[in-house]
Length: 260
Ligand code: 5RP
Picture 1 (tube, rainbow, N blue to C red):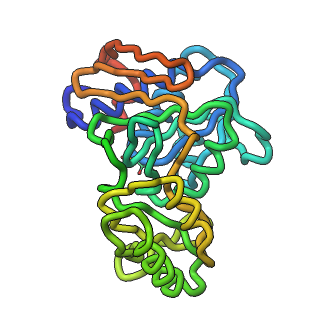
Picture 2 (cartoon, helix red, strand yellow):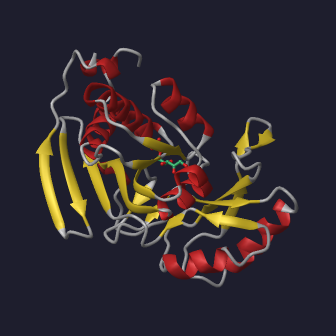
């Protein structure tokens, strides 16, 4: 069954499986959103079942909450959990400083709140997300629906004076209607091409009226696990200053492959 997965899914699975090894009994965990995070939730649920781990999980979206609950994980609100030991999430881009672009799945607001309320954040990814300079992936910015077009114009004007290559902001659509986040907001995707100064950009964007949060994660991610289709994984830990390589073995009988 694992052999039938696409190379991208095999890479995501390998990264997810390695990151779940960092989970310990009794932990409070943040669960990310997206296709890589979904692999992590499946791996986590399997480990929790096999080892009878007592875990408390906070999801970063309704779809992750549904997946986690459906697999038997205990899901609660962040306020119920209080503070988290570890959050594991995907990313759309990461650079050498482990600065991230997130929000491709539209969950950046809850993802940033949950990751920031965690002692540690591990990003799981395939090698395609690593970049020298952030910005090829359009930067998502969450805005309230009221005056979203005015916020868009203000952002485009702002971008003209910053160290970026492009200045176009597009309202994300879901068919014929604007995409709506779990908080009832909209997303503007900024085609920047290159982000010269992520910190300056992040601070400036969050000053624009109507902006709730942007998808730049700066000084939040502690480690990244990069998975490859052949099962190799590389874990770069910025806090420990270590780089570890190992190989995940795809076990055909793994339960997690059965419902894919
Ligand atoms: C959702 C996110 C995701 O983590 C990001 O889009 C990566 O998703 P995927 O693992 O499907 O490539 O930020 O808001």
